[in-house]
Length: 101
Image 1 (spheres, rainbow, N blue to C red):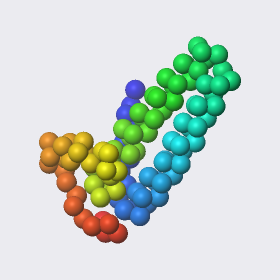
Image 2 (cartoon, one colour):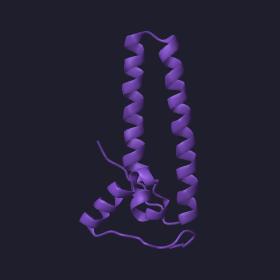
Image 3 (cartoon, rainbow, N blue to C red):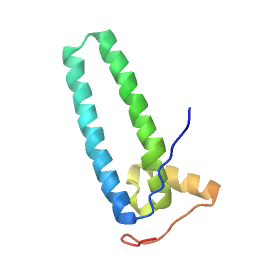
């Protein structure tokens, strides 16, 4: 399976994408909570695993590439992880918010 990773060169677009993915994640998780109430335990488990796969793919293909390129857009809860990865790879972008490529 081919792995795709987004390369977003415009900081404003990166921020828009992060905002959109945050809304998507919130809605997906809310739907998952509703599914827990109305679906069978087996169906809920399958859905939960599928949602987990979707969110992991979203993170690896879109979110983390943006966070690596624009560390100042990284949520506080992930800053240590991104900083460690950037140190290991030598890829650090310390431009201030609003800076464009």
